[in-house]
Length: 315
Image (spheres, rainbow, N blue to C red):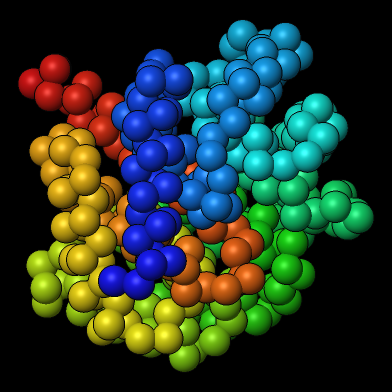
């Protein structure tokens, strides 16, 4: 294992241990998100800045708004990576209002989507983005009406930000979807999410690399949480088979250094932590959207866990 990768693992673990103490009310999964996104940016977590952002959002939004709970915790971590945090928060509020006027549901997923537009859409007409996002969402809804929902808002926004032509989306998504259905992905929503994200790379070559990556993980019985499939869709990798070996090495190192990774963590979530750490070292400067898709995956994973616990309690 090279020094750069080992240093990134060490920073991730150090950030996690700090977050577990300083942000203990966030819960373990969000603590791991904090450790990853700041390690990705080669930074320690600025805890005071995170807490100031949370206070500002609480003071400027309604208690019953979607800017609360896990959404607040996750959003504040992402905003803490930016400059002029009050300005970006106010931009999020304006974009959120614009999107709800377009007919999108005011929900937790729309909060994260609004952040993405505020971050990546600087200098772009927000009305144009919101209209394009609506057109894309309608297209998805028409093609896959039974599995398209609020969790697709983010990728629709990314397509709109990249100004991908609707006709291109319509043709390419069908090709990718048909190829990916051959993979052993049980969730149709998972297939669609991965398909949507691969579209951002815009190449069939990337589609086949991603499929090969998933197949190699299956052969080695490496589990991955379905909620993080969109993240795989945007990550680029030159050598998928070599990466599988690295995943196992990184997981082993994490478990040796910190018991939380070995004894108290879902294996599918641990895999995405390893993949994220490895990718941070191999993707070069092409880092757009990774933190946001990782954040949405963590949030969806939390919702899935909570839903499972609720169903078990009622059983």
